[in-house]
Image 1 (cartoon, chains in turn cyan, blue):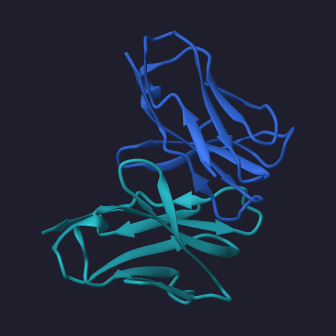
Image 2 (tube, chains in turn blue, brown):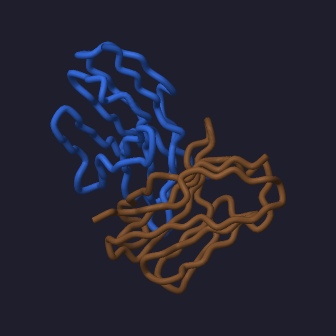
Length: 111
Length: 112
């Protein structure tokens, strides 16, 4: 059965801290892994990682895919209060018609 | 571009009532999806539409129906609402199946 597990479930840090969020997956014929940020409303797309693109970076956010360990990490450096959100990991595999989502990590950044 | 829009934003229903959630996208995407999000369970796919004129069941289709009205619009209907359908509903779209999905702002539904 396809599975996506995120850890930790929740995290509280102070502004300026660096955080690492984890996502592990068990799917057949892996195709891509996506990270989303969800604040009060809709998830917004952050990164997509595939076999040909295992590391992505945008500003203070970066993500790495470890295909051997079937996992991915999302790093946020110099956190700000605006980073407070739920971070969702989702996996797509060949032949699948949708994304399999983890339950998310709730990040709270305290001033 | 508005991206993906959903109406209404919030709705309260009584058990047994029916309603339709509306979704539209202006990104010329072929594929559209309906998810529900419940605490501790993440996003679960209800129905999806690979392209205009096609719809398929997702992980949790029972109690729902969908209509892909045209390329832009994909509606979700609850024929006889139940308290178990209290949830936040998200519509999403993507260029094609399996590609990056873009989400609407969500509809919060409360069934009493």
